[in-house]
Length: 347
Image 1 (tube, one colour):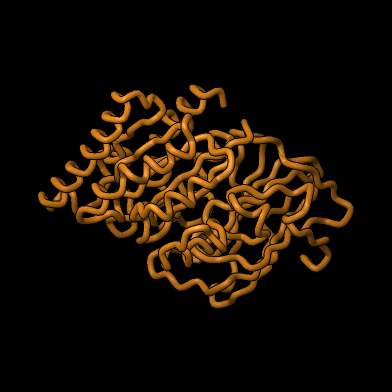
Image 2 (image 1 turned 135 degrees about the vertical axis):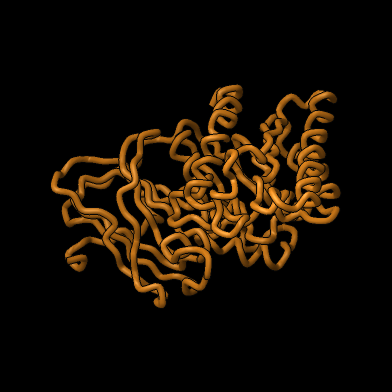
């Protein structure tokens, strides 16, 4: 019974939180500062309360690991499972070799739940990562372990820096079936580095006030800009150069990786949509090439249109948002690119 467990707050040692760049100052599970220096767009400010990319990390010899969770709202999405929107999931194992072992399954009509994420027969130390919900806020969470169990800090990431990924609903994790399948979380496991997920559903438009706020993230190892899908009309053309300029002014030597959007299902049928994607892809590539020609050797471009493969139309829920298969393919395509960038700067 879970009432036999001892409950811990992950806000205290030896637990480590990842993915919340302003947590040390504000002590809330939020992806952007609650009181930013520049007012944020309303939608971005609201979506920052979604906990995509957040992680609880620790080691324990407990045979059971459970969570108690109070959400800020109910599961309410028609095209994404409640396990991805509002659930936690659990991975165990050493860095770069963690394996999935359980998901919070609960009554999705409720705002609070308690769930055992895994049970095992043996008592031995293991490295644990719990991934926060992707599309809902978390007001409180506690970790339940068997009384008398050892709890220690997690095995370390490869460096003190973090990869900051800015983008859209796809970046945020829509529509993964569980949190660990968002591409930023897959990459975090594979590369053994903290990711700060700053994907904002329908609202990744590259506003300068958002860029200035993101530039405040402490000790970034790399920035990923993946927001084309929300920057319709002339928005991308107007915002990308300035977004890059703001990041570069604050972080002279931090790599910036610009990623064009994945292929959408209707690209196969709508010639206008395909031409528009190609135009935007080429603009992003040319922007990066121009900056590199002017001496910025720490900016890179990756063509996202190939990430899902030839059968890209089979990799989404609704023609846009990836399934878990789609996210695996995105992570597999990006992994060597980000790995090469990190190695180039000694991370």
